Image (cartoon, rainbow, N blue to C red; front, side, top):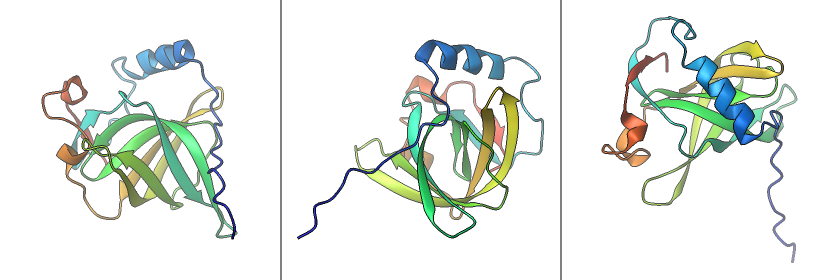
Length: 151
């Protein structure tokens, strides 16, 4: 009987907490957003900054990464990744629900922009809308300062 092997996650960013805080602060500066049309209210989603994402490669295989989450909406998620991802790439995002369960949410990469160094700002649109309150407590500071999201 084969044993389950631990899932190997690749951290392409390899940022310390201090480097992430510095990059995050830059992203929060006025004018740092892309200014595009947003369809869904989004909320900061950095409390559990590292999340797992699987990206489908051109050869149809899936590669699993650790990324740094930025924000979440019913229609999508924004995260920081350490390499370029082509728009249109299929992805699966693993999010922890407020009840503690993990959910796999499928989506498509809609944008990927170089921020600095190897850090890329990635926007994913979910295939189906999610209920934000499954993942973010309404009374938590995660929901402060709502923005509008492309997802």
